[in-house]
Amino acid sequence: MMTNIGARLTQGQFSFLPDLTDVQITAQLNYALQHGWAIGVEYTDDPHPRNTYWDMYGNPMFDLKDPAGILKEINQCRKAFPRHYVRVTAFDATRGWETPRMSFIVNRPAVEPGFALVREEREGRSIRYTIRSYAAEKPEGERY
Amino acid sequence: MSSPSPLQPGSVDLSAILREARVTEALDQLDRELVGLAPVKTRLREIAAFLAVEKARSGFGMVAGAPSLHMSFTGNPGTGKTTVALRIAEILHRLGFVRKGHLIAVTRDDLVGQYIGHTAPKTKEVLKRAMGGVLFIDEAYYLYRPENERDYGQEAIEILLQVMENQRDDLVVILAGYKDRMDTFFRSNPGFSSRIAHHIDFPDYSAAELGSIAAGMLERMQYRFEPAAAAAFDEYVERRQRQPHFANARSIRNALDRARLRQASRLCAMPGPVDAAALSTITAQDIRASRVFCEHNNRSD
Image: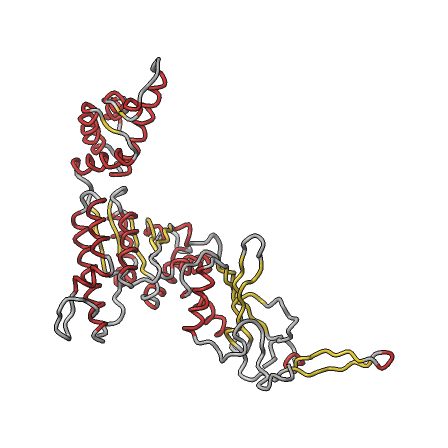
């Protein structure tokens, strides 16, 4: 995290690349739909990497053929939460997988302050490290 | 465009566009497989030609905006509305006016919810599934129930109208239903009427057409009429047409199914072995046993 100079959150696919355009997102969604994965739109304002379960925006979308409907959903979510992280998750329900196969961020806050390294003194001069997001200091909804 | 013929630069071969997109093929298939429906077929050819011209124009950079392709199919039951809708989806897909070319067939139940706040997500869900293809709303007039002013159908109508207007390049909506009730529906919802470019009326089949539909169905099911049965069936069609609740091709299919049923029980009641010819032959007796031939039943209808 400390080496990520721009402090951009790097979670999921494509997170080291510049933000995906709508055309690029559509292409990725098409790939997921071709495999028959269910697609969900999720949002959060807690960027901690262990914050796995984000809030779902609407229902997960099954049985779609075309990404236009999903893109519309993404744009609605962006409009409702312009300063939140929004990600798209493609879930594979195939037996044996039963897990998200794709996950990428499609919306992020304009300013991402990043994370601080926290050192905790333990007995015997040992040190425990953890990270703390600057944004998460503030209460939910007022971050970013 | 990419036509191989020696075209002057700046000109375009429209039939080549149709050929390359395999639209001519789809239309010919429609001609072969669907009996009658001449006005519908003419209209489809017109639409296909229009779309080809539109495509050629966009090749020259002439823009007229995405053409409105929403349609309404009116006609009596069993006149082939759903079948034609399937073909339209295919033709639109081949010409590149819808991206995926699938058909989602829905009725009021799939669009309208049961309590407040249920309708919008339900309708949007269906619209999402139909994106990139064709949304076929059967018996669309049920969406509008003027007798109940708090009916949730109105909400579904508003969402539909909005999407039909704003996402014209994402999906094509086809409304289908009986002629008179659709007319009332359009009169009370002028928004729909003005957003629908193509009103296509499906005529009833004539007796001769129904006969050839029956022949085609039998052939696909690997049955055949004995000569007397064919004559009996013609008579059956003529009588059935005069009765209420006649549903064109669907009634024909049901009649054939019942004839098969009677044939089966006749064969089972017969002593001794049966051969392949007997298994695939429907006799006049199987058809004449129908209640359509009962005179007094006829009168009570």
